[in-house]
Image 1 (cartoon, helix red, strand yellow):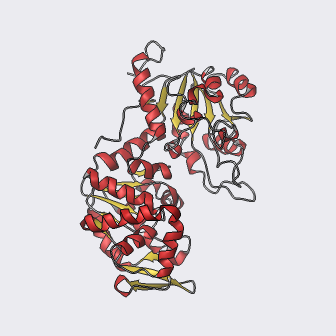
Image 2 (cartoon, helix red, strand yellow; image 1 turned 90 degrees about the horizontal axis):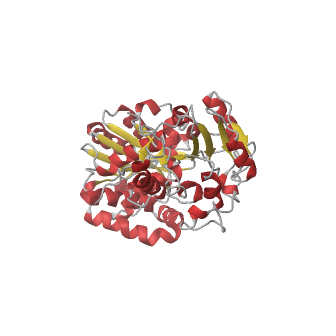
Image 3 (cartoon, helix red, strand yellow; image 1 turned 180 degrees about the vertical axis):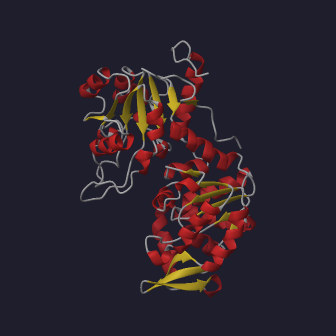
Amino acid sequence: MPPIVTTVLSLDDVRLAGRTVLYRVDVNSPLEPSTGAFLDDSRLRSILETLRSLSDAKVVIMGHQSRPGKDDFTGMEGHCDRLSRLLGQQIRFVADVCGDDAIDAIEEMQSGEKIFLDNVRLHSEEYGPEKVSFEAEPSSEIVTRLSAVADVYVSDAFGAAHRNSPSLTGFAEEMPCIAGRLMNREIRALGLAVDDPPRPYVAILGGAKCDDSLRVALNLIERGVVDCIPMVGVVGNLMLWASGHDIGERNKEFIRSTMGEAFDETWQMAQRLASDHSKMLFLPSDLAVEIDGKRHPIGVDELPTEHSIYDIGFQTLMELRPLMLDAKCILWNGPASFFEYPEFAIGTIEILNMCAEATGVTIVGGGHTSALVNQRGLSGEISHNSTGGGSVLGMLSGEPMPVIDALARSNDKYRPLLGALELEPID
């Protein structure tokens, strides 16, 4: 299989002082519904390194928050204010995407200044029924108007790297497109997890996105790069079921309802893994079920159960520990439990503690697991804590990554032209 890591332009390749930079980020953040206050600003913090690297440029920040029709679909003024405080520099908010107000603001900028445009998904070309096709992106209003007043495009929108839209992928043919510091780290770390991880390599897959997790498992196995795949959380329950354990009708129905129309295809993948690759899998030996709001242990040999399975058990954690501590590389994506309830957070928290204790490379893949790393103050103990969610699963499963592909295409087109564009490479 071809490697997923590809060559892209980086901020180490060019000097951008004095240049006008379109900077696309993914700072889509959880907000408190009634006040709009940030519940987690880690995605804003994750772009600070790139912004500091662009301190002498004119930086035009583009981003989105949620999508039309959702309660947390808002403008970007709050993001601009929070980012200004985190950066320690005033960033001007412009309530426009690519209209005259945005263009005028960009043309008035001085070196070192930064502006934050409004939610790009307010523009009909970007999202929803009127979203332009991939082929039409270069001729969209967003691309044609903004490219006319900018020199380069920088992307740190890894959280949306599995999607395409004018602001994400439309600039590849119009100007040099460069990976920001965050994007480069994501590509390198997740590329390592798929292409050439140190061995032994343990990939822990959990959470409720069973179809995505099983695609990741099959991709890693088919690439021949993984040694053991522990399955936990709802994914682990599904694999116990596919391996011949009756997990009880309540838990089966939860999986069916969660998967919806994707269940049949997912069940086929689960059976394939169970029949063809059982030696690669580590499945729970005991579990914790919920009875009247309390945690009750149950061995796998005691199944089926009429109660909801909410966590893995202590014996499973004891068996998992030596595998993780001996590993040279650990990938973890998806919680092991219904960790929002303290009594059922044990499995997830203990896996996180093992990741922090491990001496090998540790890669935590986005979503709930990434947020937990930040909440427990363990970011410094993890080699790479991804900002992605669906993009992590897409990259690990070998799915197309339109944003990264666009960066690669732009590299092929513009790297030979850097001198002519007076974007002299950094020595």
